[in-house]
Image 1 (cartoon, rainbow, N blue to C red):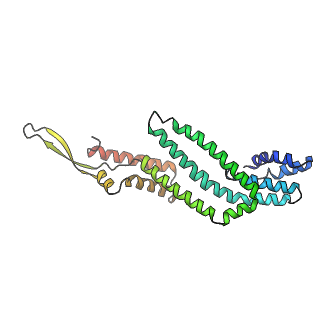
Image 2 (tube, rainbow, N blue to C red):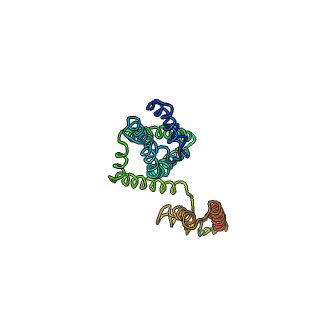
Image 3 (cartoon, rainbow, N blue to C red):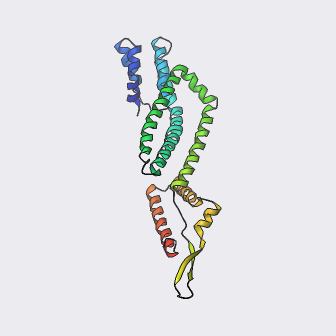
Length: 259
């Protein structure tokens, strides 16, 4: 997992803190064991462990405590990082950049450029701030952050923001119409030719006038239900959408919707 990477990140600290080769080897060995977390938020673990290693070098800590703290931090940092950074921030940033890319040919190139600038800068700032927080406040700061309710408030805020973005994404990018029309031909009494095709019933317009974008929402929720609850595979879902698209398109041509 991240054992070797964590050990590599701790190597300069260990080189600075310990004098003998045996002490450095022992410290590196305990930091190359199994370790896994979300990389950005997990930088707080590096900060906390740096503080503990400094205390250990001064005789105020034990190697067993350092290893125990590392293992204890895997769960909370992984949960926070995956939910806030991976599952919320990155999708929101991608959605914004995709919208920029689809805007027009003149500004479409800005989408990937914005992502390539914002993502690494955001990653660097978050990692550095959390590392300093971990080093300065240590275990007490992590426990205080989790016990005061700030974590729950932040999680709830990011969850609501994520739902808003997903809703906007659904309305903007999912296109689903109901192509059912009733058309009346208006004839010229003198020549008997058709003057105009008058639409007297349009199912899609009626539905959107009552609840705009409800059909894309219904399709998205249906796909989510089949995937999350019924355990359909993505391949089966793509096949279902393909069949549904063919059927609805055929209905549209037969009713004159696409004429």
